[in-house]
Image: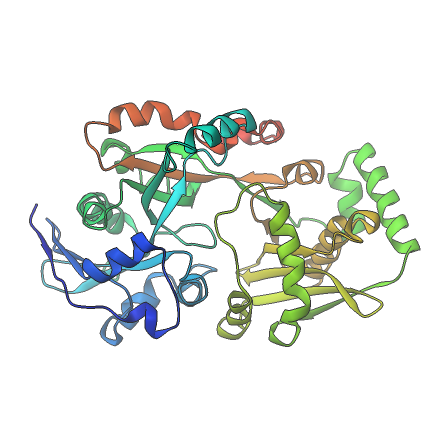
Length: 419
């Protein structure tokens, strides 16, 4: 396969005041753009979407809750953490059929493994600092699940899946990435991405989201219809205890900018307690979410005596309320059972506004299990760019996937769907 690499200087990231890690900065300066000749036409890597391709870019993600605007705001607000790029897929006539976003990142391969393994690796890294830390090309989003874009000719994703299968290996090599990952793709993509398995990829579960069908009239019916007697009794006790304290008032806004200094520290408290830390959101992320996607973004704030003590960032689309990020004041969160209070209030709001499904982001599986959520499987498709190593890697990678070491996940009724 013929590959052409052009070397003009790039000022894209410095122009917007962002800094990349040294490896990503080196690639950005020395290997952009990359142009790869393929059997379907050409694949070209760019750092920003040109005006000429703006229509194709917007069309490819217009059906998703996180449309092209979401990828642009993550690029702008998280560009100091990830090297965001775009792969322009042109057919043999030179027409842009699709534009697939991706990112380049250094990732620790043992993040999801048990504590004894991670402690052992910590000792190994005293001598070999980069052990099992690999530079990756990731198809997907830096803050959320991944999606294939739709191509303009067919309106589907099959052509894009085939094009990526062919183009990604040489693109990854040109970018210095030793692994290609399709990050957090819903299981609905298993059919169009089935060809990746023949191309040397392994499919393993990522940490799943969860979902709850809102097939009840109100929260009281949910307690009665969905939950076990034990869980229902436990929740009622929690809500009575919360009600006995200072009154909590919820407000709903679409622009979080006026409140960002109050609520952002709440998100940081949750982040600090999390074992899994891929992205670290910024104030800019939340502000841009509300202002660029004000037709879909919604924010919930809970106050005690006027002080913000809880916060949730959601996206609403096609009857689904997606609860993506939460913030809690742990000085009062446990005493007032804020996690369960926020869940109740969001579900009640969703019902009152005609939503049919509630989706929650990955992690925190124990309460979700008792609240009778179903898992929403997310897949990783992974392979190395070392052809000689990849057969062995495909055998090893199932032992690295994070769900393997979370026993709570296996208790969900639909846990078998992860594979």
